[in-house]
Length: 162
Figure 1 (cartoon, rainbow, N blue to C red):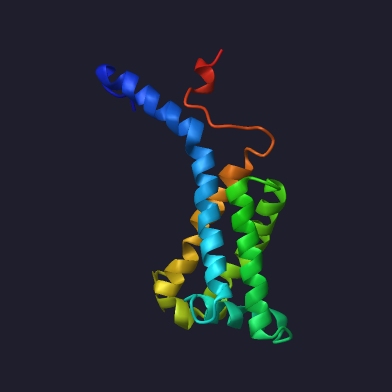
Figure 2: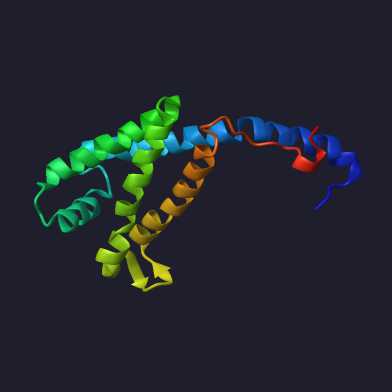
């Protein structure tokens, strides 16, 4: 959709700014979320996701990993993802860690549907919504990942670039 001609210069400046900064802001925002949520898991009784996370890990491992150790491992994993995203260091490894972690975060929807849905599959509880929002984190990580080889966003359509 075209903007009115008199607004076109403003629109060009705004979209150029978004193209220049969008990936960095997305990466930093993801980093904040992972660092924050991971750090919460390091403090007993502070993370609202701790119980569900430890029960999920227990289900995956058949109870072989003690809950506190499992939660600490998950917390450190998430903190490392957060730090990698915030700094941009080791971005490929960081994104691999994120993509390995995300399937586990989705498992409570399968393992504990009575806690994650009021009415399956269309009415998630607050816990279910918390889990489902991870789809947005995955999408954002995919966009960030598309730039690890030097790719970037462009405010100009490819057909207009010279």
